[in-house]
Image (tube, rainbow, N blue to C red):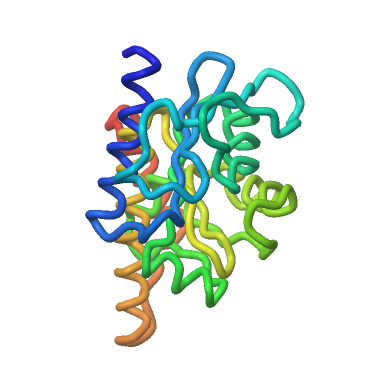
Length: 215
């Protein structure tokens, strides 16, 4: 796939995020690793008006300077995209959005425990919620990295969510799955006290996921 095609794929994924209800307006952003750089959506540009040349390019091989290439500046959230892709070589795509149920739990600063075995698709027995810092800050990037340690997703306190994958298709799949889990957990909380799977049950699921293309 050419870099131009990857740029268009990012735009298409953004349009899909909004049409599916996973995100609203321009609040979400997507990045994809390309060689030693990352491509990331521009700041404050409606997805339907975004063109491939407006996708910003940032070097991952150097220090975090904020230097970028392109016809539009990168998303204000570029720092946590950069930090995750720089330090987690198993990931090549990051999806950030403000889906309703993930954001509701993030406002409550609740993690998603093992209320369903699919939580194991994110690497462990829960999806953590980070601490709070203003959007676009390096402090938020550090908090996101910490919440994602050993995981492929996290909630961002009073903000939204992040999901990562080996490619954009997997990152998008995880973003949808995370919002589904958040909705199920929230609905279970309204009905009573959710039964949480224990460590042994989650470890069994993790073993079953090996080679299955989920974990």
